[in-house]
Length: 635
Image 1 (tube, helix red, strand yellow):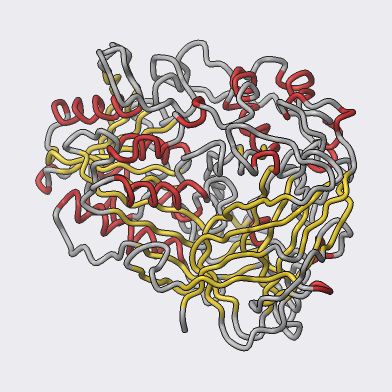
Image 2 (spheres, one colour):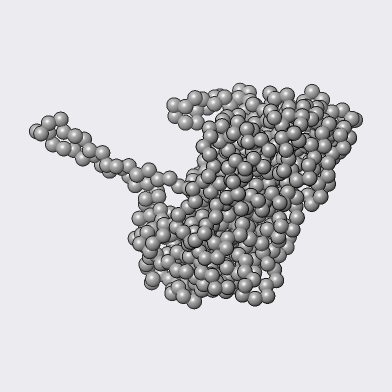
C-alpha cells in the first residue's frame, strides 16, 4: 500500500591522465534528476517548521509545515496530507525530495502540511486500523479521523501566519482514506478534498478482501511490517518479519492452512491478524469501517481518483464517488480514472503498464491538467472550473473521455452469452441445462500470473492470459473477431448458474481482450526479448466471488452438492474499447493463487480456521445459461 521513490545519486566522473604531462579533463557532471530539482526548489522556496498539534482529547499529532518564503504573494491556502506512513525526514532543517504534487503546485504557492496520524511514528495516541467513524460524539474523548482532521485545520488557521482561511486535502491509498474521512463533518475551511485510491471497504472490494475472499500475499507482506507494535513514538519504520523467498506460489502453497501464518511467522506479533480472523463475515466491525458509512455528511468539493489497473484499491474510488453522488450535497463531486497501477498517477508518466502501452504521459496530464486546476479553483478562486464530473481514460483506444456522470447515461445494457465449444456472443441461445465442467484441486491451484512472483504484482491486472487458457481447470469462451468497436463503460455483472460436488467454492470471472494474430512482436525494453503480441490475451477485468456469500455476506451458507445454484456479483467498472478485429474472451475458474487464498471447498464456519484435511478436490459445473452483463456506449 505504501509506495517509495528510490533515487540513485551519480558521482562525477573524471578522466585520468595517462602521464604527468597530460592535462586532467573534467567531464560535465550528470544532469540533476527530477527529484533533485524538486528537492532543491523546496529548500530554496519553502521554510520548514515542526509542530505537535493538540487534539481535543489532549493527544498531540506530529506535523510538518512548509510555508512559502515569498510572503508578499500570500496569503496562501493549506494543502494537507495525513498519513500512517511517516512524514519523514524529521528535523526542521531536513527537506523531502518531493511533495508528490505537480511542480505547478510548488510554484503557485501553498502551505504544505504533512501529519503523522494518531498512533503512528511521532504522533501520540493509539493507532486503530481504518478507525471507525463516530456519527454521534458526546465529548472530547469521542475522537475519530474526522475530529483529528477538524482539530488540525482549526489549529493551523489560528497559528500559521499568512494563510487565506482555506484548506485542501489529498492522499493516495491509506492517506486517501484519511482524505475521505477528513471530508466528513468537515471544518468549514476545508474547501476541497481528493481521496485517491482510498481504502474504502476492506471486506467487499479493497486490499484484503474481494467479495469476502482473502487477498493473502498482500495482507502478509503489508502487515509483516506495518502491523508490528509501536510502543513509543519513533522516527524509524518497522522491519518486516516476513521471510525471504523467491517463489510466492510455492511459498504460500507450502504454508498450508492460514492458521500456519501466525504460528510460523507472525507469532502473535501482529495484533491485527488476530483481530482480522475473528470477523470472517460482513458484520458491524467491517460496516463501521467502511468509508461510505459517513458519506452523507461529506461537505467539501470532492475529486476521487483511481486507476483502472489498481490491484489494491480499484473498488474504493468507484464506490466512494457513487456513495457521495447518491447521499451527499457537495459543491462538486467528480471522479477521475486513468490507466494506472496503485498510485502511479502521483509520481510517474503513466505511459505503460506491463506489456500494454497507453501512448501518452497520462500521469503528467492528470497532475497538471486535472488535479492542479481543481485545487487552484477551490483554494484560490483562480481559473475556470471546466472539469467534467467524470474524467475517464478509455483503454484500448487510449484517449481521455469526459462524461456528465458515471456510468454514462448513454451506455446501453448488453449481454454476453456462453455457447457450446467455447463460443461467446451477444446473441441469446437456448442452452437448456447444458454445462461445462472442470475439476478444481486446491492443492494444484491456477496461478494468477504467468511468471514467478513473490507476491501480488502490479502487472497482473493486464497480464497475458494465454497461460491460463491452456489449463484444464479454466473454462474459456471466445467471440468471433469483432466487426466494429465495442466500448464497454461501467460495472460488469456476472450471473452464474453453477453446481459443485463440494459444499463451498470460489468463482473467478475474467474479461479479456484478445489481440489479432497478425500483430508484430514487440520489444518493450531495449535489448530485451521481444514479446509475442499476436493473439495476446490482455486481462481487462477479473474478479472473484466466494460462493458461501452468494445469499448473504452476513450469513454464509454451504452449497448442496450437485444442486444447481446461482452466483450473482458485480465486477468493478471498466472503460475499455475492444477494437474491430479483436475478440472478447471470458475465462471462468475457481482458484487464482496465491493472489487469493485457497477455498477448502468443504464448508467450515470460519474459513480462516480450515484444517489441512478440509481441502478437497471438487468438480464444478458452469451452466451455459450463465451470462455476463455489460454496458456499451453507442457508436
